[in-house]
Image (tube, rainbow, N blue to C red):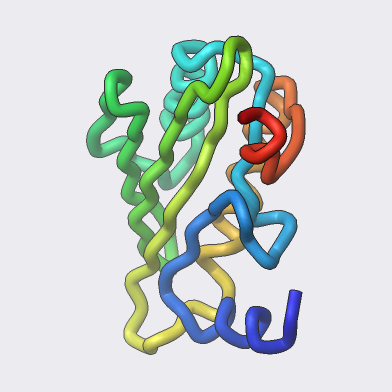
Length: 134
């Protein structure tokens, strides 16, 4: 990760995971599971996590919308997509509500912590594997 990327991570109030991310920990993660199982695990994780409130979810679209936080409030959208049989991708987008135009990496920390918890619930296959699965 370049110095510019590290700087931008701290002066932003929004962080997203994606296939080709400069930060290895913020790349799309793939799990060995069917979409419904992965979706239900992500939904259950959010429901069991203190200070997370599931606002809406749609299995058809593979989206879960969550409000959360204690000191810093955030809005999280989780996307669960089955990319091949028994391979499901999970992405997150987090925006924080702060008085400042930056969250000092809080939104990235929320994503990393959530991925860490999800790795314990589902069999982790790898990150940024989209090109290899096509």
